[in-house]
Amino acid sequence: MAASSELALSARGLRMEYRDRSSDTRLVAIETMDLDVGDGEFVSLLGPSGCGKSTFLKIVNGLLKATAGEIRLRRSGTGREDAMVFQDAALFPWYSVLDNVAYGLVCAGVSNADARKRAAPLVELVGLQGFETKYPYQLSGGMQQRANLARALAVDAAILLMDEPFASLDAQTREVMQAELLRIWNAARKTVVFVTHQIEEAVYLSDRVVVMSSRPGRILADIRIELPRPRLLEVKRSAEFTAYAAQIWKLLASQPAAADSGRHG
Amino acid sequence: MVRANERLFYGILGFIVIGLIWEAAGDLGLYRKSLLSTPSLVWTAAVQDFGSGAIWPDLGTSFVEFALGFGAAMVVGIPLGIAIGMFRRVDHFVSLLLFGIYSTPKAAIAPLIILTAGIGLESKVILVFLLAFFSVIVSTVAGVRSVAERHLDIAHSFGASRWLQFRSVILPSTFPFILTGTRIATGRALVGVIVAEELAANQGIGHYIELYGAFLQTSRVMLGIVLLGLFGIILGEGVRRIEKRYEVWRQEIH
Image (cartoon, rainbow over all chains, first blue to last red; front, side):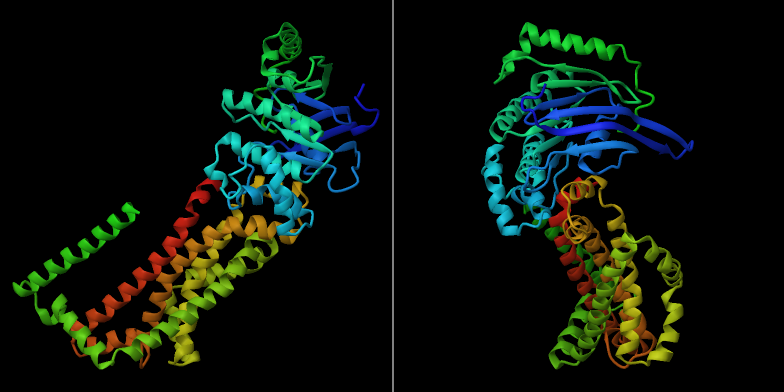
């Protein structure tokens, strides 16, 4: 089913539980999850808040340890297997744009000077040329997320993990950034796992939309989006697009509201 | 810029107005000049003592006491504060001890310090250190504790070494807090200098004030006080300006 026979990411029997300190009971964030992502694929994880989709990304990234199950990432040879694009305000306010973008390389042991040199083309790729010496507070939300993306691209990981990166942007900036992401994805040829709670965003961006249930999270459906690429924003007004969105909406609407149980990400 | 100049302008204007009222009240005989002096008499005393150079050794002594005690407070306080903030065991080990010393009025400890360390430089430096040290520690610990979880996540996510985590996240997040602690510490260190000198010393501004107070030379007492005030303002303002530079992103952290 993947574009290439090789898998970039493979999760088997993944389960995540938290201990709730106040009641000393165990909360199940992810029930069991099996997921394969092909090399070069753009896959969205879509679900209500508290369904464990962000938790899944954090487990893949190594920020959290799963209670059970196994994650396999394809090694790309050099550098890290995966790089995270965080939610809003995820830049260091005390670093310039260039130093923020270079940070992942510095973490990998590259010298400061070399890291800056290697970061520069990515600053350009995300359209931030001329802002290298600016600080995050001097940038708009959209520009901050461009820098956030460039930082993840700079380490040249095989997989980009994107955790609701556009959630705090206004509607218009969000659309611009979605189109930008597709342009950059096309240029950088990465595998992307993209977490969102917006149906329309998931359909527009993805090769596959993996719909998750409300807590405890499990996969409800895995829908292949057969819209032609490159996708312009106009595609959002096409009949096929609307049909996909409606299909997913129905799946989610059948879920009980998660408002009272969605405290953990 | 305009704001900063305006602030300075009104600040100085405030001083002048109060000075004029003080002067006028003295000239009108609303109080006895021998008890509270007047700005012009303080000025005369300043011209005399700076002219003859008699005040320089006192100023020099106090400055050295201040610089050594304050410097030691920074050198010990910042690393210790960071260690307390980062490692729970260090915190448990020293917290109660520190809190105990912190809660004891230093004026109560001062005679003991003078008894053991003598009336020379050492006792002054120790007292200045004790007073300044806690402000530095308390602010530094608060800074380390308020490091944003999401900033640490970024470092972890990209696999930063522990040293890099410290250098790239903990230290820059804590830095503005350290500055605040430093600013508060300057004032407290100054108190330490004067308390120690007034208790027992044969040189220093505190001694100068004490000595001329005994001779009822209130113009010189006032001169000492004004010089201390000036020093405090210049130092505090200096740190405050550095703090301001970091204010922009400090707001963002919270």
